[in-house]
Structure formats: structure tokens, C-alpha cells
Length: 112
Image (cartoon, rainbow, N blue to C red; front, side, top):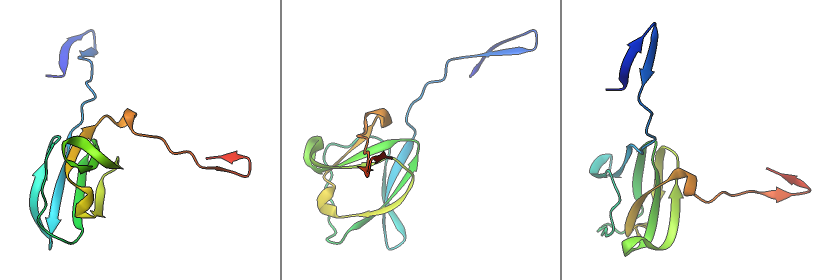
């Protein structure tokens, strides 16, 4: 329960825990193949063409091109659907969003 006590019109609640809650769904021809809820160190995909991935929730994810979270990394931090080459998906890690790399684009004296 989130509510600890109520006193004098005030509600005292427990501290909120910022845990990741989300999933990755693999889709083929409009059908759900399988869903991932947490990190998976070894993943083998049988299809040859790119895969459609639906990301849901507030989690950030890292797709690795090699098993056990090694190799080229693809970072995903927002919900939605994306197509990825199956060669880029050999393991998937749930990642702390604050640890994702930041990209700053500079040019002409301005930084965005």
C-alpha cells in the first residue's frame, strides 16, 4: 500500500521507488511472437529479415549484437515500434535511463 497514515487531513505516503516497468514485444506479420520483461543474456532469432520490436513502459533498453551483453549496442529509451536487423539482437539488457549516453550536437557556435 502506498498510503502509510492519514493525520489531520494530510496523507503521508511511502517513498516512491523509481523502478523500471515495461516490456519488449517481438512482432511478425502483425502477431506477437514473444514478450521480454527483463534482461536476457542469450537470444537467437530464426528469421532472416529485420524484426519489428514494440517497446512499452518506462524502461530503457540496450540491444547487443553479441551474446552476454557484448558487441555493438543499440539504445532505446522511448516507447514505440522500431525495426532492427536481427544481427543487432543477440542479447537485451534493461538499462538505467540515467546511464544512457547523451548526444550533443554543436555547430556554428550553438549547442543544442
